[in-house]
Image 1 (cartoon, rainbow, N blue to C red):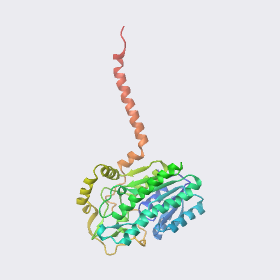
Image 2: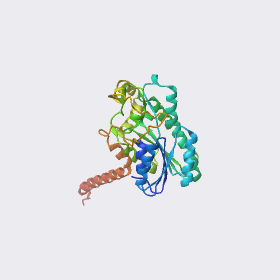
Image 3: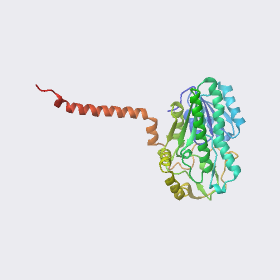
Image 4: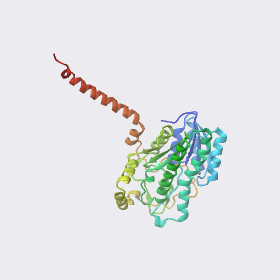
Length: 340
């Protein structure tokens, strides 16, 4: 599924990773896509990809932690294209390491980008959408918005906060009887540059907890969520499993993560001395959408296939059940004939 032609779409964090893949997934002739991020080389490459697909692109270098910059970007989109139909909050930065090693300024910065940046984006989008009484806001969340894990406290806390902010907003929109729709797309582990860009306080390189999925799967889910009025969607069985397990046995998960949560997120490779960390400044290169886990990353998810094709599956199940019932009825028919 690739998004409807003619829509005006804003994507934050569009220079790399899932934001970059999402820009490509929305791109088609007639679409108009605003690309927001800090990294100018990544933004320039994203623009080329969008335009090669036949869509119109608008590059807006923006630090999502700055509410004035976010508002300015939204104003520029409205000035150029007259409206905003879909706003995707995807931008994030984080610090990888235990809480005892966190610097307060680093924690503040990660929170400002990942949580407050999404809140600022939501507020800027709402201002334009309310004027037209239409629009969709997609919050790119995570299984970690429900179940926090060790070594990722800043990211987990920001996604928890965004989920709370979105729940409050959803109720307010219902109270107003507003047609504006807001949805969460909660992701599993994805192969993005995040694991090379994040500030790393550990001695070894980080990795996502397997199974790992390719960012194009997340992009397809984000586009799908923008076109279907679902409260929340989960992408990848691990995201749904984490949410269910945390509701049922949170104490068990605490102990499992205490035992396995460190080793499961660290490779055997030592941390590189020449690494680039994008917490305060963007990395000065085009990283694209993929990280360094292409060899093990999956392109499909059976869970997402079931989620996104639920209506067709229910219809097929209904037809199958009717066929079984009809077959049983035919077998019984002779015994039902009344004899004189």
